[in-house]
Image 1 (tube, one colour):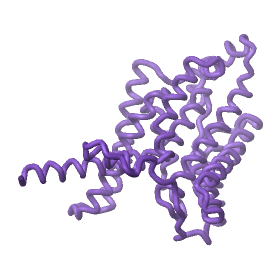
Image 2 (cartoon, helix red, strand yellow):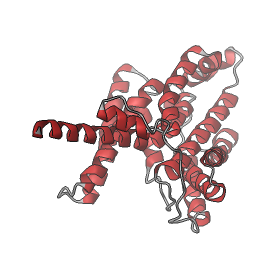
Image 3 (cartoon, helix red, strand yellow):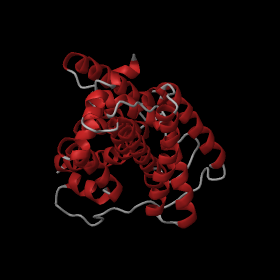
Length: 312
């Protein structure tokens, strides 16, 4: 009897952790997918962090005003795309250094959201509800997972798979890959690399803005200054770990989300380790995965050829 109760307890913990992993990874999946597409066209955007903040602030403001989480997501997408347009204008239009431009966009997003979001700090909104609140499969972890699975998380899980198919099978996706591998070869095929890069940067900003809006409206359901806490920079780094492959975005993001969820549960359980040290664990794991991913791509390729010029 006691063994059965213990097993049920562990299954409940497992289900709760899996659900928390998916919710934690959802904003990252959008930002990481967007940055992967951007880098596939030989542009790096450190402004992803600022775009996340812009999406989070804009989306939360609309959610607080209208009470409609779907309108909030649309507003967040627009805010992230508008901020990414600045990066596109600086890099593609004026030939500015991509790293410097990305940092400028990041700081701009942080400053604007801290100023315009100051009256929203501490407010609460309602996010999306679960898709299957009454799920009953008979398996406790799966039931807990399904009862907390919302539309944003489902969309985030499907997004990398769809983008991977699009890059490899769709004509437009193949054109984007051609631009990332060789501007000269792309031009010979009648492709305008600058136009493709502009589309990628704007789409990346839109996806980052959606991730930010989900972070504030659906995940935390509140607003605080610098709410993303470096998540956008994590996304930029994890592109290396995913080897610029949208299909690898999903396991990489879930690894980070699972670690983050485990840290929160360890803190709630009162583990006698400094909360500051525990909070570092997801980022330390991210750093280790990035280093391993970089070593792998150095040996076997993966980085788009034209992207190497950015680092040179």
